Length: 216
Image (cartoon, rainbow, N blue to C red; front, top):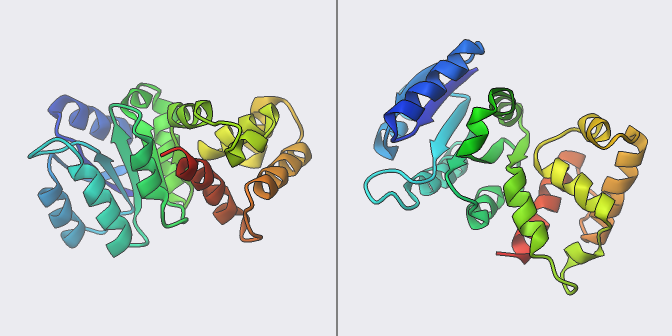
């Protein structure tokens, strides 16, 4: 797997590089601005772009804009966005295509080395990874007129883990229930959110999009 890192803080940029390299992930470049990111993508074969949301020159949304542009111009390239704060609108923008190979994590997740490396590998494999704090923020804002309010507590738990990119097997292990039970819960979630029959992976992304849409 070949990765490019775009992060303006030198220490974090170096730390991410060392971390991924230690887990046999090839970091082809580590840059601090979107111009350099574009140049790397033009010159190198890259599987995943790890991008900070706030980059020079204004430190507002340069990384987000670059990530969305990457998704549009290079559909096969996975993108994992890192942010200092919970900004659910950014997550919604990234997920808007309804496709996988995308992730949104808070920077404090990097301290959990295993979880961060797993997130990079999940998006590289076509999965979707959404930070649990973003999930919690969105679920907390649900009201009785919202489709999300139709979900039971267990269904909310399943959806939260689904949004983190967990497989049915992983969700079952986390909640101490059977995979068959997880399957029933996910089907009920899809039905209550009014999601059409489609490839399961796409429906999982659409389920996340449904509550992001309602609360941003």
